[in-house]
Image (cartoon, rainbow, N blue to C red):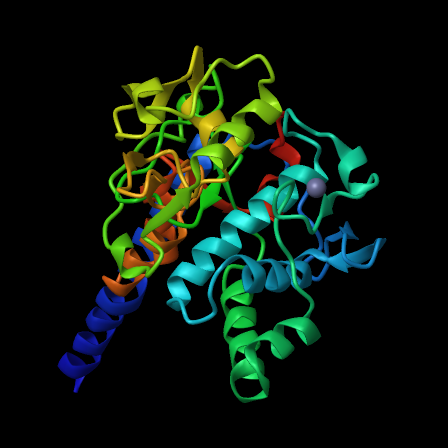
Length: 344
Ligand SMILES: [Zn+2]
């Protein structure tokens, strides 16, 4: 009998106590990286609120951060994506919103969102959709189910944000990198962000919009550029002889391109023609039209949403997904780091 009790005690040690020590050990390692003198811990049930300028309604609303995030994930990522990808998206979206609340991003032009912390314009902050509109968009059948799936993903990452060397990160993300993400400085001149490095991103061709062909009539192609560059010298005749890719980045995106007598950045070329990405090739159709084939969708910096979904399908958790796309970052709870905040 004593032997059995001894055995049970031993097994209890092995099964419960030792893993507990190991887990505690892990969290201590994280804490070691973050020197903390008596952090101000939020009360357990204290809810963070933020002001959201809802562009479609022209008014600012106060929302609990976690509730606002459900609407962001619903607007920014397809609901059919894997839960771990939705969780990674929730963490990135929370980090961005928190960074805005703390006014740490360089381009903190709050006029664009009427003085609110964030706006719902995806071109400026992050897209957002109300529960009612999301359910209407998805249809009654799957609408509520989709919303609840996203809500769970947000809840399961409650208060978790991404940071790098004691600073909240700017967690840029995009739809589809086309197989490899981009270094930040190749999109924003000179802004070399240590955690926004180019990484491989598999499985993105699962998107039907991975490769997109856009055609332009010659005169439309020319007028798009002339509306921005009125002095541009370019002729309709032999048009493609006057357009030349000069340089590509390491990830094969167009870095510099000559159009007529002007040398442009690939990102400006993309913006002027409203292309899906800067990873493109240009050809001339027999009809004379200009055919541009793009790979991927978005600026390509930070997390690829389609790549995140692929990693989730491979069994990766949201933390691994985040750490794949943002180099050497840490995840932690807002409540633990409030006191250690430093400006970005
Ligand atoms: Zn905004």
